Image (cartoon, rainbow, N blue to C red; front, side, top):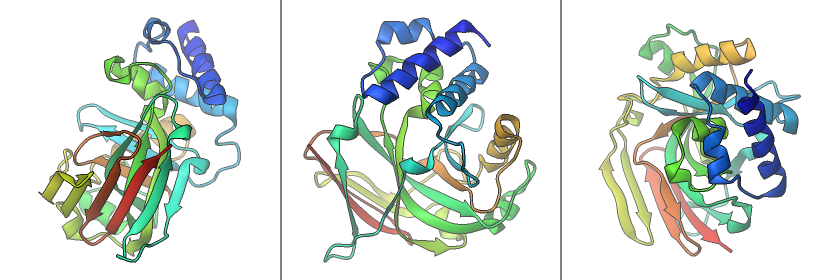
Length: 264
């Protein structure tokens, strides 16, 4: 393990503990040389903060492309179940700006929980059959390093792939449906449409990274994806940075609707 891996992990631990951000120049000087080093940083930060000491079920976020996938294991404290409904029938959830290190952004995704373990050579049909619950989910993104948009990709990966929280919205839908591959989606920010219509996932199929993730989990934690694990499957429409006072309304056909606001 390189000295830079340990130094970057120490800096990110300090940022997690203090709520501050790591200096951009310092972070660039400590940039992991590979994805392998970035995952080493993730593991060191989690170990130092005791995130996974007693957890049996795993929570993962995924991203990237089929050619260059990426992921981060998420601590259970960062998983939020949003169930409170307003009069219009949608779930309401408030984001608190005070929780941000540098900024607050969101990605609208589909999250799944597994009914059974999978294999690294599982077909799409086998993956679909292994799904227990499906949720409309919102990933809350943040960065513990300055100037997130200018950072090398391996820094963003090392910092838990920019994750701050994962919100699972409402009651889950039981089992996978064909309509979840290209669902009708609506996302508005302050009543301005960001997305409206049939979503086409950048991976082609939202479950496409599960076999790769199974292999990564086996490599990093000596066990693959198992029953009860939760995985977010990546965003259709990218990352939306929010300002205080912004209101987002997002829906995925068959999975419900959520109204989010960022408050001071």
